[in-house]
Image 1 (cartoon, rainbow, N blue to C red):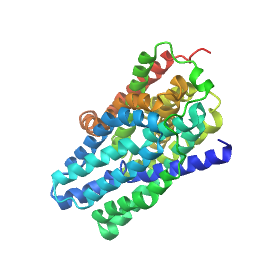
Image 2 (image 1 turned 90 degrees about the horizontal axis):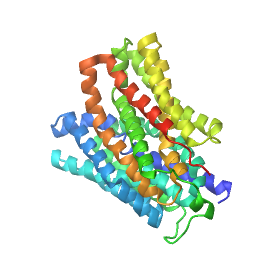
Image 3 (image 1 turned 120 degrees about the horizontal axis):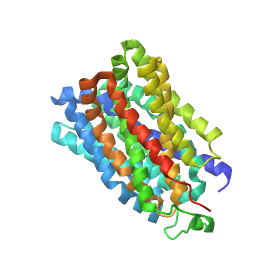
Length: 384
């Protein structure tokens, strides 16, 4: 595949991923309150249904990855658009808690089939070990999912209500997402990887390495989701005013994108282990400077955002570099499954910890990421 088609592939898949993330993962932040108010339930029930969707995504991840390994990703990603449209459609007509829970469970199936894990597996199936640059490119494009999705969802909800917002996203999957994924290259089910990909060295103890990576990404996703849900409140607990906390939190997104660009420009010639080790140190460094030295809240937000942005890339590039593209989808699903589960639990657990300990709760996330750094130091690049 020459460079130009690869750029087109990256932009196409990145655009499809932007739609998928904006209409699923980032939806509750805007719609949870109006949904709960109209249906007469607590917002905790809405987020609980969302957490159930994330748990279902974790359970289904390995099966989806195996499907992509065998058939390629185009059909899976197209199917995800249909399932996400169905889930959002059910949500748009929900009349109570049972139908809302059903809507989120269907959406969870669509998320398992259509978010980053499936996209990375698709790129691994198409490009083999050369997929690293495209994985980074997809995360660069889709890094703006919240930037696009939150204002658009808020505008739709404000103008026509949350039901129209859900229905509009459902329609977007049919009219935009499905054609984008349909345009992806098709991989024959009997297609084989290159000789270099098949002979590439792998870790001496692959199962142990997979377990170590599972911890790294579970810690990373717990911290990422905890910060996404509670960062403004956490910064206020550390002494920042509400306006400063909100302004600082808004820097996380740009920091993520900037760090991904930096990874692509500065670290693309290094093994992904190097970038992953750097990524896991940034959140603890920010936590230490914020709590011990009194660094401004914006500094912590920038360091956390940069580390989080690089971790997203590492979740796709590191397993690919260590194990190769053969069986990548299933292996990726197994490695990331604990991370999806930790995502589901993070908002509740970290919220309770903030209530009990205030800003000191930040030390838990710092220790989790320091542990991830130590684990990554135990992993060695396979010898040639």
